[in-house]
Length: 137
Image 1 (cartoon, rainbow, N blue to C red):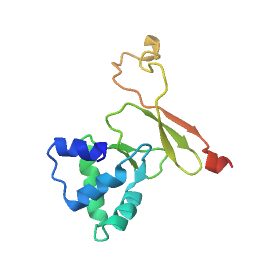
Image 2 (spheres, rainbow, N blue to C red):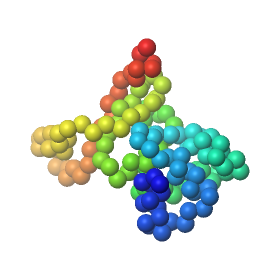
Image 3 (cartoon, one colour):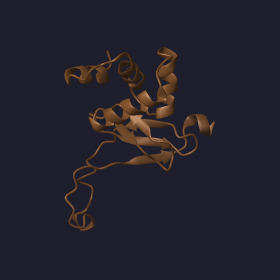
Image 4 (tube, rainbow, N blue to C red):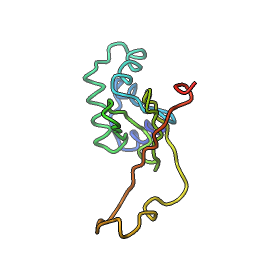
């Protein structure tokens, strides 16, 4: 059972066949699918699932804090099930593939007080950009 499915069950979220398939598609490390990719994979498992159901399920998962919605460089939003594990992203500037990374160090502490402009900073989002091995080869 995926971490996402387990979390949803613990929270008492009603797992219809459609919701279950969407959660199963999102299961795994380094999963950052667009809504259309989620729909295509879900439809292979459950052909009658509609695009609207996938979009509604993703919106609800984001609203519940179970999935992160990641937007980068004007590309399609991607959905990341690692909402409860602090991490950043490594993004290929050519194909848009994305990987989770967990660099060492405390990025909050690395911000000099003179650069906080009086803000109380609560979180940091970092996106490392580069070219993946497939695109570089």
